[in-house]
Length: 456
Ligand code: ZN
Image: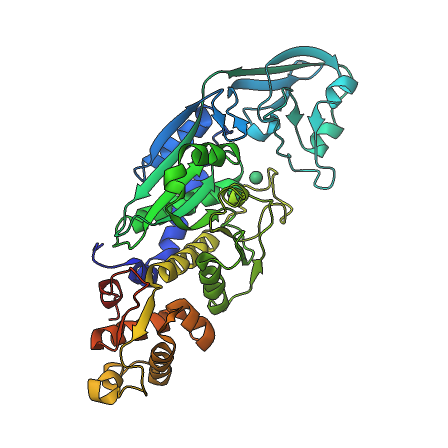
C-alpha cells in the first residue's frame, strides 16, 4: 500500500469484505478470554492487539487517584464453581466465564440451596441465556446461570468456591498514536473490559484494530490516537494522565457494538454541532441505508467521560444497535455468532467514509469571486468529461465556487447543495489545481492536501 495515497482513496479501494472476515476471526480469537477492568485477561487481550498493531501497553497502579476515582485492586481468577449435593460441578466458570459475577471476591462456603439462590442471577425472560453481572466497586461474590439450569437444581447442600484474587496490582490500557501531517488528533476509543461478549466489546476492539492497521499505511492529515481502555475507569485514567493530548483532540469517536445486523447509529457529541457530528450525519445520510442519528445523552459508553463538562471534547459514538437495545446485550447470546462479518465490513466502510470527510474537509476561497469564472476556457468542463454524471460534477464545481467565500467549509457546501461530500471534494480538487480556489486565510491546512487527492 502506498503511503502517498490518503484516507479517502483508502476508503474507495479497501477490501471491506475481506477485512470483515478477518475482524470476525479476531472476535473469535478473543472471545474465550475472561476480561475485566483489570487483570491478566485484559493484558492478554491487549497483547493480542499488540501482535497486530504497535499499541503501547500502559499500567496504572491500584490506588492511583484518577480524577474523582481511584484505580481499584487488580482482579484475577484461577477457578470458580458450585458443587451440587452429589459433588458434581453444577456451575462452572471454566465452561463459560459469564458464570462468575465479574470481580467476585474469593470464597469457599457450604450452604443450602435457599441461601445459594440469593447469590445466583438468571434471566427468566430468556431462560437459556446466562446474564453478565459485575461488582467492581462493592466486594461480594455470585454466580450467573440460565434459568433452565437453575430450575433443575435439587434441594440439598452446595459448595461455592471462587478462587480469585483481589490485590494491589494495576489497571492496564493500550494506546497507539499514528502521527499525521498535523498534531491535531482524531481520537478513536474502545472499551476492552468485557469477558466473553462479542458485539458489546469485541466488535469494537476488532474494528479499531483493523482501522489502525489500514490508517498506518496511508498519508494522514490528522494524527490518530487509538485507545483500548476498560470502560469508565480506563477512559478516566487516560484523561487524568493526558491533559496535553486532550487539548489536541479535534474529533473523536467511541467505537462499540459495530458487528450486529442492525442499522448504523450515530450519537452526537455533547456539542451537537461539532465537525464530527456533521461528518457522521452527512455520511450516514448519503449511505442510502436505514440509520439513526441521536442527540448526546450523559449515558452510554465513554463519550460521557470525553463529554464531561471539564473536557467537552467533540467525541460522538458510531455504533450499530447500541448498548441495551438488543435482547442479547450483556448475555451469553452475545456470542461470535451474533456478530456478522458483513456487518463489521459495512461498519468499517462507514468509519473510513467519516474519517475521509474529516481528512478532506477544509475552507477554501474563490479567487475569482466577481461573476462566474469561465470554466470552459480553463478546460474544467473537459476535465470532467467521461465521468458517469458530468452534470452533477459541473454542478458540484458551481456550488464550490459559489460558497467558497471563506465562511463555508467543503462539508457545509455538501450539506447545502445536497451533494455527496466526495463529489464536492473532487470538484474542489480540480478548482484548486486550476487556481480558482485557494486556502482561506483562516484555514491553516495546506492546499497541497487537496491537490493530491486521488481523483483518478
Ligand atoms: Zn457492556
